Image 1 (cartoon, rainbow, N blue to C red):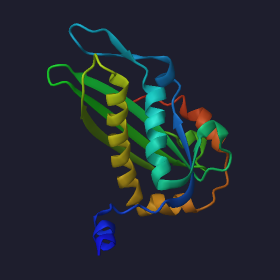
Image 2 (cartoon, rainbow, N blue to C red):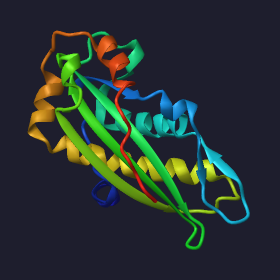
Image 3 (cartoon, rainbow, N blue to C red):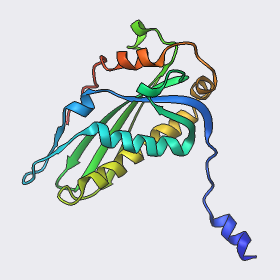
Length: 187
């Protein structure tokens, strides 16, 4: 009887979706840090590495085959991620925003301004900027990525695209994605 109650209280595990996804974050997020606002602390945040770590943690829970864009020749879909982070020092809240643009592997390089699917989600995480800010920022990025994944999982065109083999070159597509302008965000 105790096993039945324990089984009912355990959270349901999501079955991993099949498909081959390449993840790309533009070079600018690895080369140019942003300053997080605080009246007494001078904290700079390099968005790329932390957002990549959070994205892979979230994506690997839900999808079978996730790869870095540079290592993927045969990905069905390329997922371009654009991370943003803002800190509110009065409320001690990290605000993460992730913009995900989905491109099919066979997308022409001249058509990169029009992604197959575009999703923008935000998440908040309470935390102190002076005590291990990367821990709180990673949690905020993971929350935003989970929202994006929930949206993509329910999109029929996305689920059919990741299951359909595409003829194209993901490496050429990934290299071209670095030249796209980032979203204009005003805080």
